[in-house]
Image (cartoon, rainbow, N blue to C red; front, side, top):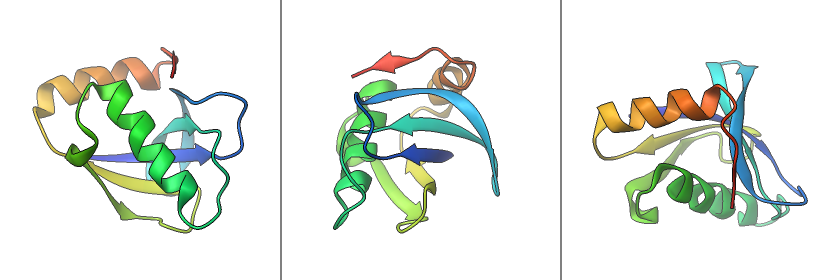
Length: 97
């Protein structure tokens, strides 16, 4: 399943939750402490999403937006479970990591 995310690098805490419009439709907000330097924020985003969805980091891959705040992430696994969790997160169920 592909998920559109909007990244906020340099945040005080890592958290996943909330919704924002993006060029690709509604995007899941992901805030990470890492700065957008040398791929650090991208790695932190994938780690935060893995924890929020309860999957291994290897189940996620960045497929678009490597140098943008709007990214597309591929999540391998049970699409029904992923869709349910994504709905919860988009509606604002924040998960501080």
